[in-house]
Length: 153
Image (cartoon, rainbow, N blue to C red; front, top):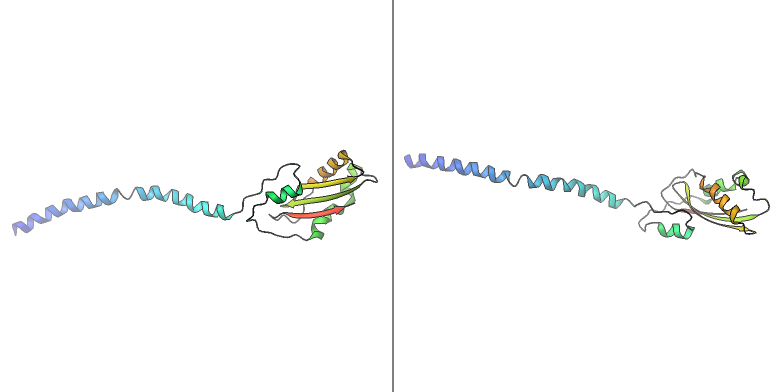
């Protein structure tokens, strides 16, 4: 019986060592837990398609190339896209007169991000004025997709 009494005190130090050992591994999981939320935040960012990088005065073809391959395509009908371009009052401040022009406009989130424009006869000053007016338009369909509209006058 005395020997049995000696064994329980020996077991108590072992038991106290076991929690100390379990406490040491416990801090690394919280450290791991911090990167895990970052890692959990990262996959949704990877699923989101990044915004294209449109630059001033880029061509419509350049705008098309700037769209990430993973982008979802959301078509806006041509009638909706061309409607703001049909308003003659849009062009009046530029005084196009009898000059004809042809537009090709790339629209992203309701804004013109690229404009190809030719005037006949050629008039760089008029072309820049018209591009400026078109950049001021906000289309009602503000979809995160590139839509192209052509218009001539």
